[in-house]
Amino acid sequence: MTTPDRLLFLHIPKSGGTTLSKILTRQYADRHFYFYKYGWGKRSLAEFSQLDEADEARESKIVRGHFCFGLHQYLPGPSRYITMLRDPVDRAISHFYYVARSPDHPQHRQVVEQRLTLHQFLQDGMAKEIQNFQTLAIAGINVQDMNQPTAADLQQAIANLRQHFVAVGTTERFDDTLILMQAILGWSAPVYVKQNVTLDRPAASDIPQETQQLIRDLNPYDVELYDYVDHLLDELIAKHVPGFRLKLWSFQRQNTLYNLSQRWRRSAPSSPSSSSSR
Image 1 (cartoon, one colour):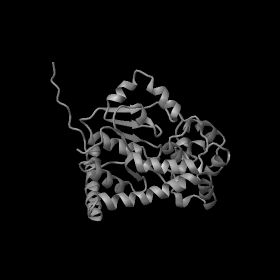
Image 2: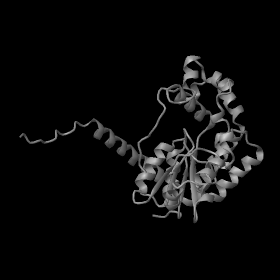
Image 3: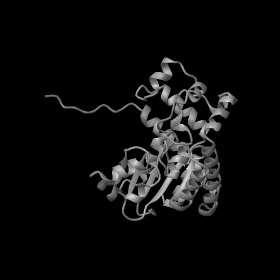
């Protein structure tokens, strides 16, 4: 299987990353995985590098988790990143309904007790976790401070994507992204069942235009970065995936059959276990 010496999956929350993580687990079942769980921002990376546990990451060939760009600087040898971005409007909607349905989230109580709408949530300044967050993470600046990026940070994010990411895609074009990663990384068929889906949330088209525009106004750099990645995905597919349309059709057909088989396995009655009486 064609892989860099180390593959770093920069998992942006609410972007389809849990499903992609499952795919990675199957594709690299024989590799040593490490799950990074020490938070966003350069300070987290620097603090992590001093922990004894960092030795495990240094020995791993696959590292995944919620970390910003820059982790490779604390690991020996060459590393390459992959990631997925999500349309900022859809990501904000998913995040809000995730907060509203997750009692463990620190903002859950306020959202529920005050019966906040998505628009109020955004207006009340509770949306720092989704404001230009994708640009912050990929530029590798201090996400923990929730500082707003600048135009220079956006250009840094684009440069990082170009120089350090072996493949990148979008949630909205999840299958296209998988076909690209399969071609570049030599994967077997990356079939999947969607994981960690926020249920009972409205589609973006059902959200008032005023609220959609507010999300865009709060995320100008993420909007630009997402559009850039959407075009970059087309560029990478044209370069690495000859016969893309046929391969995509074949994969989607295969994945439909895989999902049907998984549903059948879950619904099939389990066979009674045999037991001997004494």
